[in-house]
Image 1 (cartoon, rainbow, N blue to C red):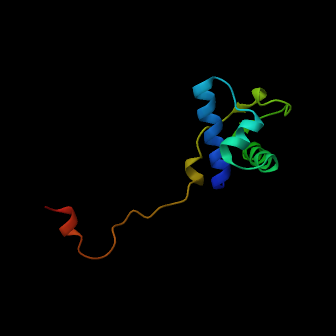
Image 2 (image 1 turned 90 degrees about the vertical axis):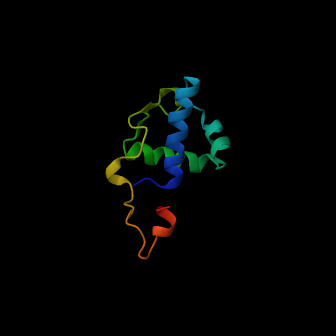
Image 3 (image 1 turned 30 degrees about the vertical axis):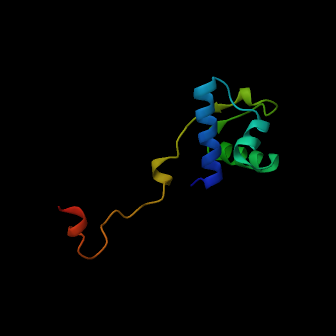
Length: 94
């Protein structure tokens, strides 16, 4: 499961590539995330380890390839969608 920051970096990469037809530089990632370069590089390394991106030549972000742009369904946290106990007819039936 990706951390919130790793998910944020992945979404920035995906959306930036779609909008500008290039990947953001590491400096642009630091500006967009508000984190320092070591934090950005750690998130990118985690995305590589989880096989969301492929990045052999780390000298430039233009060599990056996005393998999956969204978090995998199996890794998402499960949310209970059952209604709370009690009478909610007042709010749902009118």
